[in-house]
Image 1 (cartoon, rainbow, N blue to C red):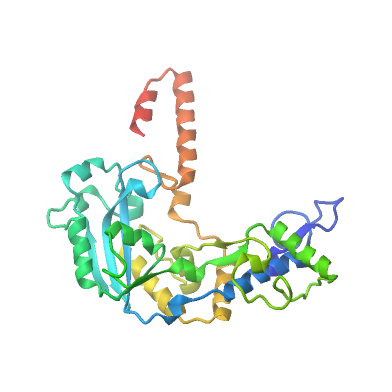
Image 2: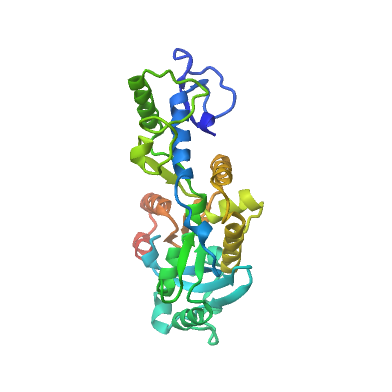
Length: 341
């Protein structure tokens, strides 16, 4: 993986169109050992990071919340919970409830995001459904006070349900922290930093060079100061992890919070006690794997609601085309679409 990501400029500057075996583009790129060394050093630093989840004893639970839209943006402030699921450490369903919104909240909902959530107005407003407050209280009743909550970006779900650490649960683990890949923030500058270090020491860096920390020896500290250049994390979504680690596409249609919670627990149980070498191999495989497009990639806008930042571009483009078409076709209704979305 380090070698594949550590190529520099064309080996034939005057013939950039020369064919290259594999990879992107049409020019052959030569291997850059300094960039490979920077990538390896970032991985070694991640190996040195603490893994607090490996020492946790549970009991483990996973919670997942599906939301509907009360605004046309993509931020969390424009969403409200509408279906909530909780499973135990064995993946058994403990709670699966659809939220019944009060009359005031129901009027604020602009879309149930049905293609994503599978929810509809009729399904949410069933009189026998519980309110959000009732479901939150039910979770508090069934959740052990020392429970460890597990899930992808689970802090959002905890906030939705207004759960308090140390009162309603013991701690939580974000799956993203287990599977994320640490890489140089800017590969070119990281490779240059490694090269400068080598020049200062009079070293000749070869293809098989072993990564070292600043000052010599192996990388044993997790901070960027020791690594010698800024690093960042590439975060992998739950669907990407399931597709490439479990060979299961659990979000091929609409999201089911029970499935999301169950597969979160399954992944956690499988890799909770994994040692750094195995975790590095897993992270490398996720990093090299083809991108698994999320719902918002294929559906940037649903019912006028932006599902990501890309949705704003789509809506702006649609408005531009609409204005152009109505101007030259003599049709009216521009203000209608503007006011509606």
